[in-house]
Image (cartoon, rainbow, N blue to C red):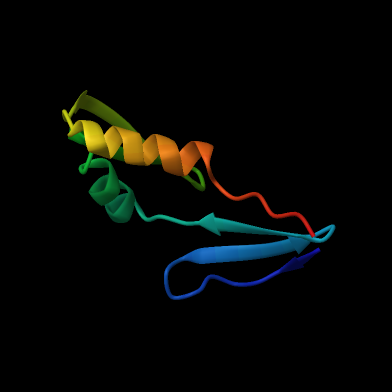
Length: 81
């Protein structure tokens, strides 16, 4: 397994058994910022090395936003070497 450090956008890459895995790392502030796009009330917390968010009062988005999100999720490309 080969692990690379974080890049300028806080992504980490791991190469294992012919497959690359990318993982995005957040700070409490950056996690809250992204959650506020979808929720009106966001509280971020830290527990050991984990950061998590409690999100309440979801924002109503346009129908097109939901369709786009579902298309991205269900049509995500899976590449295995």
